[in-house]
Length: 139
Image (cartoon, rainbow, N blue to C red):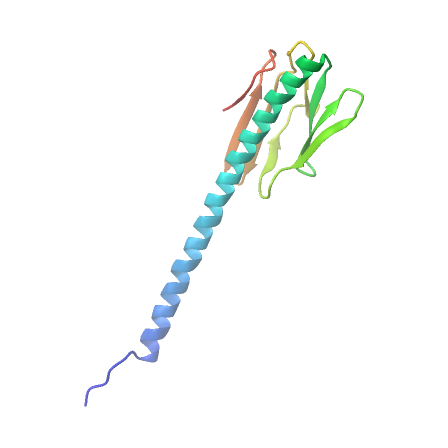
């Protein structure tokens, strides 16, 4: 007499193996998603800093890009403190390093405070460097 099919042990081993592979894929997928969020956040922030510099020159007033590490948000403000725009970094992206004053000021001439902002998610990080001429770049 021949039997067809799988034993309960074979079935349990196959299910355990499938679960192990699925959990590994999930962890890898979330890591990739975090890396993409980090890259997108860094590109967005550097572009906003470039736009803020251009707006400060066009309007003839100094503008600040201020950072709050405790809430993971950044905002564009006038020197008088009027907030023009505020955004929050997407989780799990956080500020790892900020300038001493937690802001970059763009003067009406286009110059700026030197500063480096580091965004990170776990082991991955991206640097935004602003020089005295007000030029922002990713590193």
